[in-house]
Picture 1 (cartoon, helix red, strand yellow):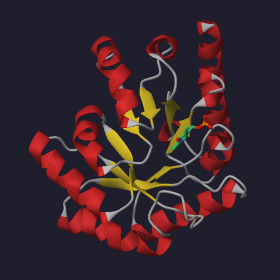
Picture 2 (picture 1 turned 180 degrees about the vertical axis):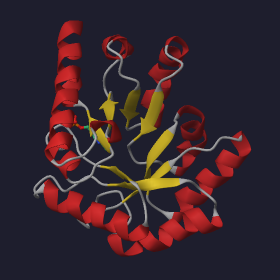
Picture 3 (picture 1 turned 135 degrees about the vertical axis):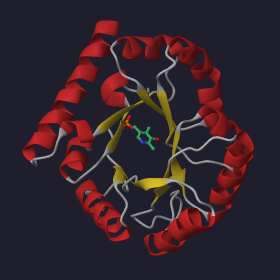
Picture 4 (picture 1 turned 30 degrees about the horizontal axis):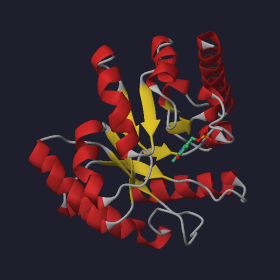
Length: 222
Ligand SMILES: *Cc1c(COP(=O)(O)O)cnc(C)c1O
């Protein structure tokens, strides 16, 4: 079983490398985040043993239940929050995570800035963009990204690494990845968190610096 997961991890790494090479990018510029949501410590350990150090979780509470113990054994791991952040979870999120990919409104940005001051901890952030302008989807509308970015950077002095998106399920992801890349370029942002199990090679071809891959590594979530 653990050989399977190590094998799938290596396969994803090889696909990233190939996609990067195909467009003349250095594969080292693409960070693989293994998305371990719904999987327990027993399933995560083999992936850590295989050398993977960046992991993504989409719920603060779930992550709190498994990562403090894993971090004791693997102090050099990096934990990414990739799911929506509620205001009442900001304190826990700042304490537990090393990177947050889901900043999508002024209120959360202000709370994060205050909490980071309180905990004396600086965490790089991504602004999540609702590129499909879907009603129910998290993320700031494309037209409002610039304003949120200036609030974060100029007023709150937050470190904004780049932009993140989750394309609508029923649309061609490439269009959304290209759009996010263009937006980041216009805003002078370097990092692009985009691409999941079904489309990470496309994302790499279009400039992703962080791909968030779950089921292709851990298997289906049932
Ligand atoms: C679950 C999740 C992923 C990974 O999805 P897979 O299809 O399993 O690779 C990536 N990003 C976010 C925000 C997620 O919630």
